[in-house]
Length: 173
Image 1 (cartoon, rainbow, N blue to C red):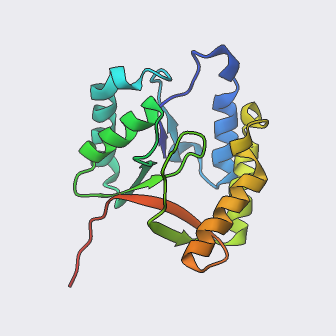
Image 2: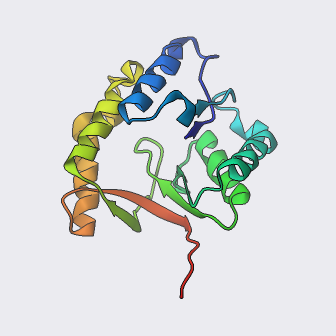
């Protein structure tokens, strides 16, 4: 798992690195399974080529079957850059876009993946590790749970994660 920024240039976000580590551990990841980049928040468009090069390196290193990025409907400039560069870097790879509630407009999930209630609770527990964002509505357990229930309803399941399809690559026999 790769996050492109550690947000350390923002004095209000100095705790995010330790919060991110705690969140990833909650999800069962070890330190070797995630990394934080050092691109400056709100400056990703200026670093497009460097971001693309990081993604190409990740593609060579991991050869992923699926890549998850922000939805193409996201209006945040950094999120847009990540999605656009991932679409370039991971040609020949399935790319799915996730919703960021506060910056996605017009998002509708066309790919739904059933998840368990325990998975939803674990996601909520992982997000609670971000004390920096505890007061933000989009980190609210009720919002997270309601979104999983809504996506579940669309899939006729109790809970689901929803994604938009940026690219599907499949083999048919």
